[in-house]
Image 1 (cartoon, helix red, strand yellow):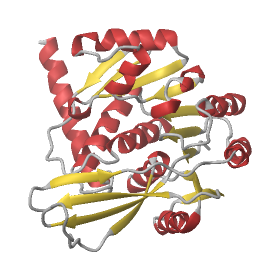
Image 2 (tube, one colour):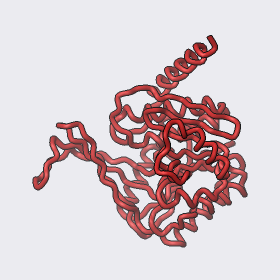
Image 3 (cartoon, one colour):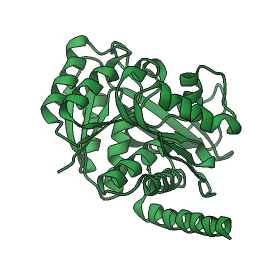
Length: 320
């Protein structure tokens, strides 16, 4: 049976709080913090859990924050394989100003990962991956991990006849393009970097997607466009889905929720068009929840039905 395995090389302990007014040079009395397990692949596993699906979550963790992170993942009932590192897992802070309703995110780099530590990840993948499994590698690489690490990962997925789903950024983005990728989900800024241009306009988007597929070994490209939805591109297909208009409370984890929905759809045997619809619904659903709660299945189902009906009506209108 197909497994979904997520990989997070740079996980994070997310701490959220709120305060009535942010002012300099004064003590700010914050609300009691709420903690979440975070990082690309961990968020994908959490979103899959919210959608009623199972996954195996692989990540690196170290120090007291790493122990806290492991406990949080366990509390959510997510299967996990943790590789211990000497460094201390990073912790990020998110603060909402309840006076202005503005959200502030403070991000710190991850710990330096030693060669013997990231090599353990590759060994574990060799042990766990089997034919037709989906490996979702998501998030930036921490210091110490080679920029072409995901290329090494792709060699294992190729050997095991598994499918690599990649969603990365930063120093790993360009080197990872030497990998054999089943599906990739860049945003517009990341696609611009991969295309060697400063920006991509709406009129240039489809051309840029076609050029990407021609230049790189990737079967399915999904470009997330935020509030504008997403574009699906393969060698034989080009499809745009608009996102529903919702009241956004947080955009944290929207991309990870989108990836979770798309991979779940593929495991369930749905078409690429249905995959895109469900992925956009998951991404939108994540934004209507505060903080890093990610998508909620009831919200996703409602938004999926709304998007699907809207697209059916649009198709009928074109035919008439």
